[in-house]
Image (cartoon, rainbow, N blue to C red; front, side, top):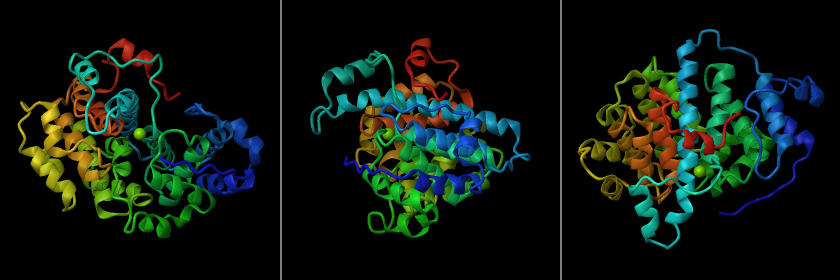
Length: 363
Ligand SMILES: [Mg+2]
């Protein structure tokens, strides 16, 4: 994927960060003094952008007094598990892509044997970076404010562009850094009709966990969160499906039929209905063959399989992630989605210590 490095002045970054914070007051010294929170650190630099983002988040107008405490806990559980799934899946990604169209035998055997991937640190990718931005808006506002979400996405991207973002985000997010409100005109023009990729779905599980007490609200907020970057109806549908699945997971009510029933009509829902008819005795690699594994980077190619593995293992994050990895394809994203859904209920505490030691933390 191409990179579009650009150097933005401090003042231009402040336009976006000021929108996030609701005003220009304060200045950099005040930002730095207030900085706390996630404590993100870039693998490739960009600490100033991170500092601004975190500081901007701490300066948001607080409007979350009515948020049930369990919403915050569920969203945090989901976020942690999403990041773990993302980082775990990412370790397999280059192995699976080693030969075009063929899965290397060793990678397949390692997954089947549950041998952990190499690497002292499992870094998370764009899935987690965007989930962190969305989670930050929720924790500060209690709902999706689209302009502020656009600004948060842009600042997150600017802070660390090396997280494996797709081409569309490399085009869109630098523009939103300058004018966050332009998502209204720019997002629908991506890929001639808006992106129908899996990017809105991959980041949204913590939102579903947050609004688990109201499935209609979870669906509506997921739609708002998607529209900022993925304007195509199927890009939105993917996000709605994953948010609903995470909400149902929190409630202990996750079924593919219920997720499909609450997903807008189209290929994503069709895939979920196909998944609902697929017995859980089916081998995961076979399910991925039938449902898609994200290799086309579309929501309808990604979401049905990831929700199917989550519903197959609703009480075991470890089993769910191994099953998802067996599907290969866009494996960091499928594992992020499955992890966010299952983790919304069970968290990461029950995972083996080696997983938790190797994952890149959230701060
Ligand atoms: Mg990724």
